[in-house]
Image 1 (cartoon, protein in one colour):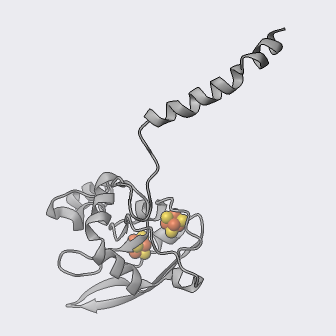
Image 2 (cartoon, rainbow, N blue to C red):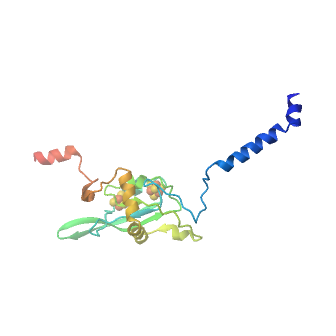
Image 3 (cartoon, rainbow, N blue to C red):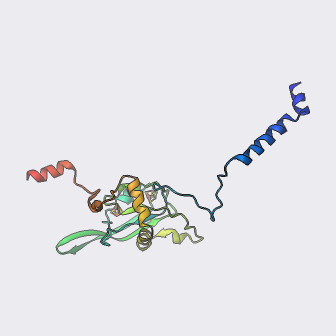
Amino acid sequence: MKKLLQSAFFTEIIKALKLVFSHYFVKEVTLQYPHEKNTLPDTHRGALCLLRYESGEERCVGCDLCNAACPSYCITVVSAVEEKDHIQRRYATSFDIDMTKCVFCGFCVEACPVNALGMTKMYEYSTSNKRELDFNKANLYEIGETWYGQAKGYLIAHNQEGEDETVSEYRYRFPSSRKEEEVEV
Ligand code: SF4
Ligand code: SF4
């Protein structure tokens, strides 16, 4: 009987029409990409980049910790040691990230002891040539220079870097026990 009444008064159709018309009064959420773009938060995990200090010196010391932390095995670092004014410094002679394997987890950025890596809001780099997605050291520094503000914003948003000039000392510190031993000596 209930079904018969529903069929006679088109109840289901009226319900469906009510739902459809109610959407005329709801604010649109669809963005007309690429003409309209979303505002991304500073925590957004986009393309990776390499960063320099204010002096222009490369932050990366080629320690390979980012590679060890990467679950996708997409980072390859080759490092060497250079000597300048009797001070030895390790640096990356080559640095590659295969972006086709990257899952944008951010572990490499977190693992870096000197905040040499950052993530940007850059996401428009699709290509038909997969080899172009193998970002080398030059590509990564270029992205870092172009999107420096975003990469720094990412580090600050993740509480990895301060806004002041202490960035070069911000993360790499000896454990406090080691410091105390040095003071005692
Ligand atoms: S974001 Fe994650 S997957 Fe991508 S390179 Fe870094 S650690 Fe590897
Ligand atoms: S990016 Fe950071 S973790 Fe990776 S090799 Fe350079 S200094 Fe080490």
